Length: 247
Ligand SMILES: Nc1ncnc2c1ncn2[C@@H]1O[C@H](COP(=O)(O)OP(=O)(O)OP(=O)(O)O)[C@@H](O)[C@H]1O
Image (cartoon, rainbow, N blue to C red; front, side):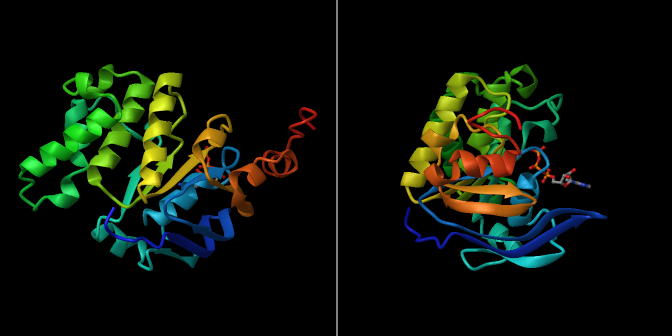
C-alpha cells in the first residue's frame, strides 16, 4: 500500500438510543497493519462502535477520527470499508454475487455508474481472493451463510479502502469460509490495512487478531490479544468464570 495510514482514534464516545446508553465514554486507538478484535456479549455495543466509526450513527458526545479525519470526510475519500452483519441484508433481492461485489466500486465511479476495466479487474481480484470466482453469477438468495458473508467481504475488498471494519464476520459461517476470511484479513493487515472485527465468539480470534478491545458498554480493556483473552479479563466482559464455568 502506498499511503501510510494513521489508524482510527475514538475519544470519549457516548452513544444513546433514547434512554439506553449503548456506549459510555469509550476511548480506543486502533492501529494500522494490525487486526483488532472487538469483543463483547450481545448488546455490549460492538455494532454501535463500528457504526459510529463509519459515521452511520451520530454520537451523543465524543469524537471519531480516521487518519485524522471525521467519518464523513473519511467516507468521501473512500478510506473506510464496512461489512455489516448478514442479518441486515435482504437475501430475496434479485442480484448476483458479482453485482453485489461491483457495488464496492461505486465510490470509484462517476455518478453515471459507468463500469470501467479497472472496476471489473478489482471485482475479479476480490472474488478470487475469497474463493468465489466459480459462484460469481449465482443469485445471493441461493448462497450458504458462509458464501454470502464472503460475498460481502469481497464487496469490501473491491472498494479498496484502507481501513476495513467487519461486524461479526464469522457468525453463521462454515469452517472453510472462516479460514478463507481469516487468511484474507491477515494478508490485508500484513499489507498495511487496518482491520477491525467484532465478535462475540472467541474461537477465531487467537489466530486472527493482534490486538483486542473488550467492550461492555464501556471499554473494559484494550491490549494485545493474548492479554485480552486472559480468563479474568474475559470473565469481566462475559460475566462468567471461564476457567470454572458459569458463575
Ligand atoms: N436502533 C436502536 N434503538 C434502540 N436501542 C438500540 C438500537 N441499536 C442498539 N440498541 C441497543 O444498544 C445496545 C448495544 O447494541 P449493539 O447492537 O451495539 O450491541 P452489539 O454488541 O453489537 O450486540 P450484537 O452482537 O447483538 O449485535 C443494546 O442494548 C441494544 O439493545
